[in-house]
Every structure is written in C-alpha cells, then in structure tokens.
Length: 387
Image 1: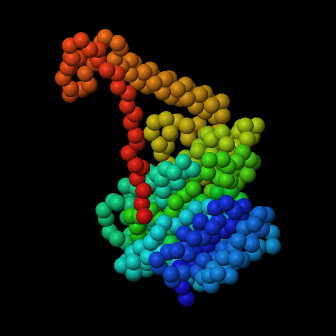
Image 2: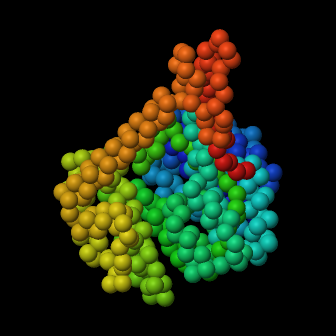
Image 3: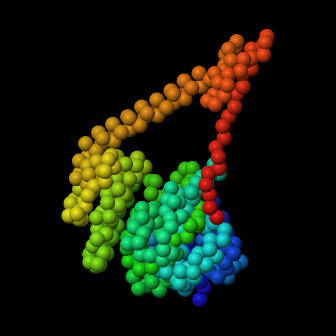
C-alpha cells in the first residue's frame, strides 16, 4: 500500500500535462501512486498518459467512457486509490519539489491526522511566482494538531481541495464525494474542515497554481453554469442538517456563502449579463431559506454589498458598485497625477539643478556647468515563493 495517492483529472491540458506529471514523478518521496483520470479529453492527453504509464509503473491511467467533469473524474480516481493519504492535483498545476517528503514527515510527527493543509503560490505567464495572501495563517503559532474550533481561520482560505492531504480511511468514514457541476470543491471542502477531528498545517508552498494568460479557467467562463453554486451550497447546508453538533458553524458558513455569491455575480466573466437579475432573485430566495437567526452581516462596504445581494436588491447593488468603481478610478487618477507632479518637481531642467531628495543636501553644480540630467528605473524586489 503506497503512502500517497495523487489523483490528477485530465482534460484538454496537452500543453501543461508533462510538467504536471513530472512534478509528481520527480518527488524525493517515491512512495506514491499517481492516478491520472482521462476525462474523455479530445486532444492528445490520453495518449500522453498511456506513454507515461508505460515508462513508470507508479502511474495508473483511467480512461472514462464519457466526459463527466472535474468532480466526478476525481471520484473515479478516488474509487481505486489505495494510498494512506489522498492528494488532488489539477492537471495544469504542479507540486513543488520535496512536497510529499515534507508532508510525510509532518503527518508522522502529528500521528496521522485527518487532514493536512499546505499553502500555494500563483504562477504567471510572465514568470512571476506570488505566494497566497494567506501565508501568515500558516506561520501562526499554536498547537500542532487541532480541530476547526482551534483554528477557525482555516475557513478564510480559498475553498479548494488541492491544498490538502486527506487520510483515506477518514474520507470513507465521512462519505465524502464530489458532485457534478461548477464549484464542486465547495460541498467537499466545507464538510471536510467542519468534520475533521484532527488537523494540522504545513508552512510550505505545495502547489504552483497556474494563471493562464488567456482562458483555461473553467470558472472564468461566461455561462449559466455558475448557477450551480446554489445547488452546491444546498449540499453544504444539508450536511449541517445531518450534524446538529455543528450548528454553531451555520452563521460562519452562511457568511462565506454570501461572500462567494457576491464574488461570482460581481465578476464580468461569470454570470451572463442577461441572467444577473435572475441570479439576484435566486440569491434572495436561497438566503431567505438558509439565513441563521444569529447571522450578522460583515461591517463596511462588504456587508452592504452582501446584504443587498442576499435580499435581491439588484438595482441598488448595481448603483453601489458603480459608485465604488467611480471612487476607485478617481483615487487611481489622483495617485497618477501625484506621481506625475512629483516627477516634474524632481526632474532637472537646463540651467537649474534638480530639487534635493529627502535626506540629501542641495549641492550646486560646478562653476560654468549646468546640472547633468540623470534617468533611473526602479526594479521590483522578488516576489515571495516557497518550496
């Protein structure tokens, strides 16, 4: 029995697949199986997987008879996974070197908890690597092993499945599976975090999350499929209905839900413009049915927007967003104007020396000479990364 089962659903990623597979196969910890699920990919991915499996016995390839989507492809891989722990990896992303070894050491030190959570970094087409904004959460002091009461801040993380290692027998005991449709991570991740009795974190970037220049992210596609989010949160609250011992988390989960709904409807690349009024109506019905009596909206602009959305006030929401956008653009223009004025004030002209910078003394130009003009450029300091 391998220590890890790494499950990789594959669909239309011919350009990135080799790098993804290599990031797993080159891990210093070799005690794993790689389960690649060909979700009826119409490109050359299926053949690439078969060729890779012929070279490395740790790869097992499943070819599905029809395209079933990301969640159900993961279920197919999970059904045959034999490892002590399961790790999910999307086929255009990569594991960082040494991750499995670091996870194994942490798991053993913590006596095999239910879930281990690690960080990720976004990688961009221009070479930038930017660690997630949640990095301070992983460095926070506290017990090595805890439940969600001990670390409620875990619910502030991006609700994805691919930044965690899950104990296989615990998955079976909880009956965790993925639904069909968009936002399939939601009804897996919330119940997993809520139900886990023993969790730990690893202060390490484990996944490089690829940000494509154009396309590739199914959620950044204008489609009515974004209405799936309502069904996915119904599954989350159905889980809570079965677990009255977790009722105290209902207001927190509801707050996360309305924040998520706001994110979806505020993005121009998701809900079709002609369907936004309907999305607001659905959101109002959804929130009226699920709103806990002790829920308190967030403070500030975020709370205003989510309350307008959760009550279906479409026109007022649009007006508030437009006003906020106008103020944002005005502030941006003011910053640009201030920078331009600063450049004018410090740029020397012929016959006049540049104004001294802060902390410098004014020095006259040598007799008979005008002040020489110099131009410089600033470079960014390297962005934070992990390994």
